[in-house]
Image (tube, rainbow over all chains, first blue to last red; front, side):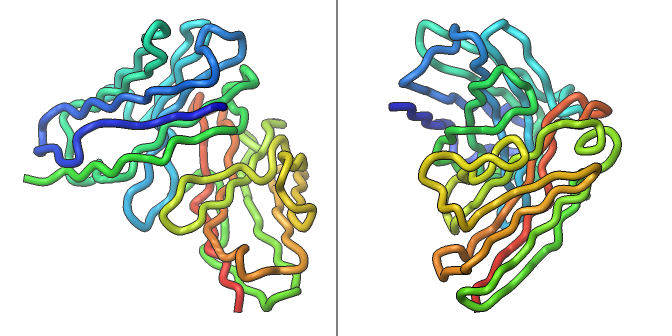
Length: 122
Length: 111
């Protein structure tokens, strides 16, 4: 069955770089149509899409954050990594990875990880 | 503020019907991009309940239905149950932003 699991530090110091890993199973990112996204949710607030990476090596970033984001994949390890540079307390959020399986970059996220809470504080 | 606009909250008594709206623009819903709806129970990840405007994944009760017209979309829940109390989000694609956009979320309270 499809599973996704996020991992990363629970606490990050302002100005540092945050590195998050999504480890997945039950599908391959080499399969046509598969994309993995990172989505975050500050406490008590709405969901915010951050980035996609897809089976064909296409990747896309949230326009407002793209200078700080890098997404990459390791298909041999079934992992997708997101780095966020120069973090600020406003980056405090639960970070989710989620899958699109239709190849449509605006498609629905059919599977989600449980999320990992990252707090940015000195 | 969110690109897709939703009412912050809606409420209804058990058994009643509620509608949650999602209003976009010519660069997302109005451009023909699909809308999807998610239910997020407290402390859990979102779960898709409507995909591609009006389709229900297997296992989602037929009390949930979706529609889209022009720059707007709606999620309708009939026969409200206590377990429906959750946050609901719409999602689409925006060509001006070249990325996925979410609504601001609607908190459903079952009275």
